[in-house]
Image (cartoon, rainbow, N blue to C red; front, side, top):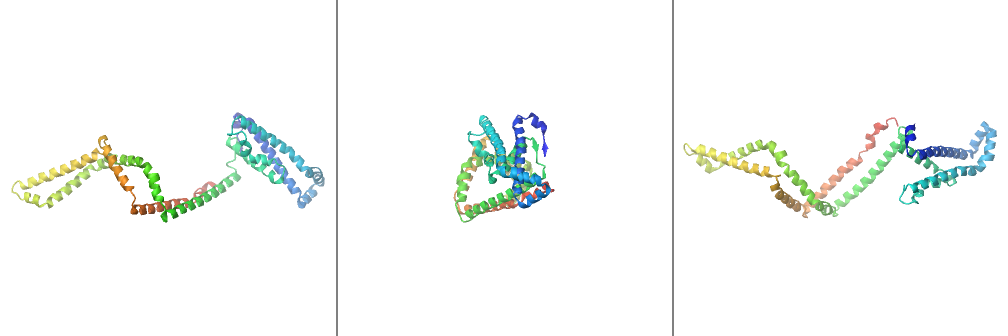
Length: 338
C-alpha cells in the first residue's frame, strides 16, 4: 500500500482524511482486541497464555475479559461521536437529498456501534469504507496489493458469470416467444421501425445520393464498354439491321452509325440518370420512391413475418455465442501472479 502524503497535505478534505486514518487505526485495534477476547474465552487459548504468562492471563481474565463490554463502550462512544460529526457535516454540505439519508446510507457504521457480538463485526465494513474513501481521494493506493488483486479478479469472474447466465436466460426466453409466434416481429415493426421510418428513409436516401460519386464515377468507363458490347450484340441479332447491312456501299456504314448513335444515346441517358441522383432537384423524388418502398416492405405479410422471425432468432444466437465467451479468461494475463 502506498500513501501519497503530498495529496494528503494539499487536499481540501485533509481534516476528514486525517480523521479517517485515526478511525482506521482505532477500528483495527478494536477488532483485533475483539478477536483476541473471543479467543481468550477458549480453554485451549487460555491454557497457552497461562503457559506463556500466568500473571498476564490472570490479570486479563479478572480485570479486562469480565468487563470487556465496558471497555468496548469507550470505542463505541468515539465511533458514535465521529458518526454524528460526519452526519452534521453531510447535512451542512447537502451531501444527500434529505438530512435523514445519512444514517441509511451508512447503516453499517450505526449498527456496528451496538455492543453486541453479531453487530460488532459490522465495524469491518467501516474499515472497507474508510479505505475506499482514501483510495477515492488518491491518498492511498492499494490497487497493487496482492489481496486486492485477488479480490478484484474473482469478483470480476463472479459478476461476469452471473451476468452471462442472466443474459442467456433472458435471450432464451425471447427466442422461445419469437419461435411460438408471439407478435414480437409486429411490435418491432410498429413500435421501432415505423416511428423511425423518416430517419430510415433519410439514411437510405443519403446512401443512394452517394451512388454517383463513390460507385458510378470510378466504373463509368467500364459501364460504357459494357453497354457498347450489349447494344452491338443486340443490333447484330436484329434482322432489319442485318438487311440494311447488305445494302451495297452504304450498308455497313449505316449500321455503324446506328450502332454508335444508339450506344451513345443509351449511355447518355443512363449517365444522366445516375449523375443526377444526389442533386437537389432529384432529392424529392428519390425520397418519395424510397418512402414508398419502405411502406410496401412494412405491410403485413406471412412470408415477411416468418423470415423476420428466423432472422431475429439467428441474431439472438449470435449474441448468445458472444455472451458465452468467458472474457475474464482473455484477461487472465493481467492476473498471472494471482
